[in-house]
Length: 265
Image 1 (cartoon, rainbow, N blue to C red):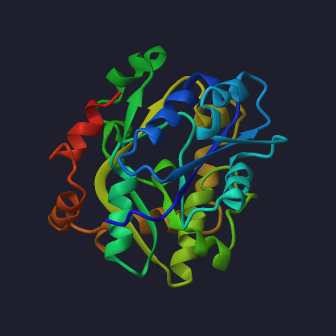
Image 2 (cartoon, rainbow, N blue to C red):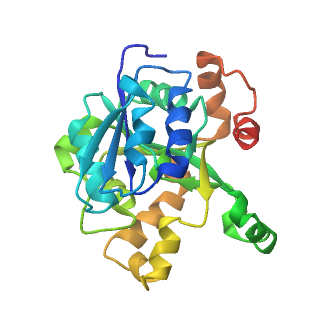
């Protein structure tokens, strides 16, 4: 496994003081430690700045006027100095082996430009009552994911551009579709390496409260195609059999990454 490539982790945040510290801790807990953390505060009015301050020089704080998550991500990408850029939402968590597994796959495929993983939702205490009504729903299933699982070579942004700031949602999906259109290699690992937190202030809930439907957003040009492409796992996902050599190379502590991430809190 490579040991000399800096990874820039960009975390956009807006009024995310409740969970931001846990997100940062999950990055600091990575088995691969050559990571710079860039927090882009998208005009928060809560204690976000002070949460970041607790981490001292282990995290870089960037403030901007509120412009939306895609703008905040772009600001962080522009500040990044790593060979690779990874994205993490301020309320989500990384499995400790996420960075190592993705870098191992970049090593294995010289043509790989963008790598994502699977994720598992988990519910904060204030909304745990929702789980009982969703046992047969997609939210409780392991799913391929972008967002907090996304990692790309920084050179891809330099060649095809940054995220589309006109999109307030699914900007990362649109970027992946653009990468595919430019002939870049895209792959989704089958491992569950992200825990996505469901809570009472998720962006999806705020969109619903403001009358913006995800259905209408999904009809935006290119986004449905991006989602369909991500679901074509035969085209962009490697089989579980081929992960064994990578797990062995990085000496994953747990032989079952999926079980380990589900057990992590």
